Length: 144
Image 1: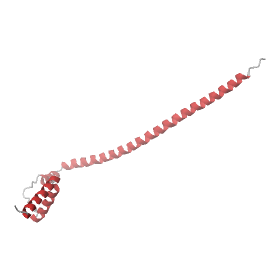
Image 2 (image 1 turned 30 degrees about the vertical axis):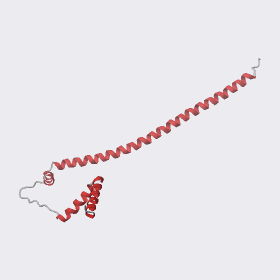
Image 3 (image 1 turned 180 degrees about the horizontal axis):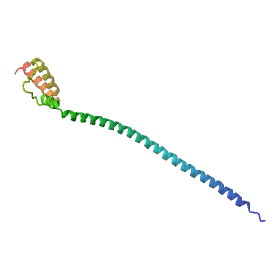
């Protein structure tokens, strides 16, 4: 029998170790890729679940709004609705009805108009009024 050289056995052991290391690195890469993709998928899943909850709430709000409008449409078909609408918005009345109007005293109206005129005046109008007041004061204090 011819003995095989020991170099081949040593080279074979080195090749086996290299193959095992390469195989383990490859499996680690595959596992890490799977873990990363699983993480991305779970992140997307949570985003979609939040969107689903939001859209379900929106659907419920729209259904309530739809019911409200359907009730309004049913109410519009009634005669009482049109009578009330005509009385409130167009100031119409039935035959034989009397209309009552309330007039506010002038004392209560004046303060309201003063407040409204003060709030509606712009910055330049206020400056103009102040300058006019100063000119008037100056003419009264120091006549020409």
